Amino acid sequence: MTVLILAEHDGKQISPATLHAVGAAQKLGEIHLLVAGSGCLNVAEQASKIQGIAKVLHADAAHFAECLAEEIAPLVVSLAQPYAHIVAAASAFGKNIMPRVAALLDCSQVSDLTEIVDEKTFVRPIYAGNVFTTVQSHESKLVLTIRASAFQAAELGDNTTSIQSVTATPAQNISRFVSRELTQSDRPELTQARVIVSGGRALGSAEQFNAVLTPLADALGAAIGASRAAVDADYAPNDSQVGQTGKIVAPELYVAVGISGAIQHIAGMQDSKTIVAINKDPDAPIFNVADFGMVGDLFEIVPELTKALNAR
Image 1 (cartoon, rainbow, N blue to C red):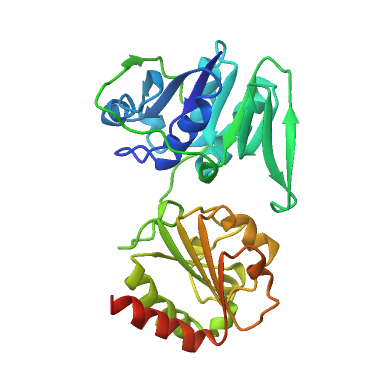
Image 2: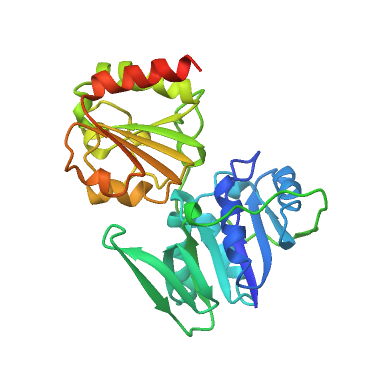
């Protein structure tokens, strides 16, 4: 079987989430990677170095510049005929485009996969990650989105595969790009960070959130995340939210400070390699998934922890 993966990129770099999608799809068969954009040959050349890719398809047109779903979906559909699986990462990019592709192809979509058993059988979470269900479909064509944190990323090598130009579909002109506002930070991007320090509502205010967590994050070289309760209370910006309705992360180290551990939050970080929880409530649900737990006043524990790390 042959797989078509839609590459996510910013016009300059391939998204790390796409590398995870390639790593996942290697169980499904020969992989072709579609890079669509405007003036993005450099991205296609970068994609050609991904290990495990048999071919890169490159579609270049002005109306692909912002990767609008209404423009990209018809392109994917126009190329879909020889492929048994059409795949993207389960990021905002993939979640926007792939349901449109499935609808246009009149085929099923299996979303947010955490395991590929075989080419027809997949595992995905339901009920906020409390249950994992095995889904099987015998349709001739399937659309899949991959939870990046559940799979190893494919690596970039020295050898390159072929790049084939494909015909761009006509502009649909049913939506238009207005503007994009991106958060600028010197810290690692949350979904790709090796270490994450997250805070909850127990921090009490935005001022205390920053005063307590920032020094710890600096000491660990970490990204800063937040629970939904902390975001709703305006302690942290929306794009720092970790959980079912936020970002799904799986760092090597996740430090949860003042987070009780609602199932919606745990669904977004339970795949972390090592989880450290700091909470004054010994019965807090976060301790059920933590590898290490510290029960006590976070306003005493975190500064002491930060001091010890800086003294190394």
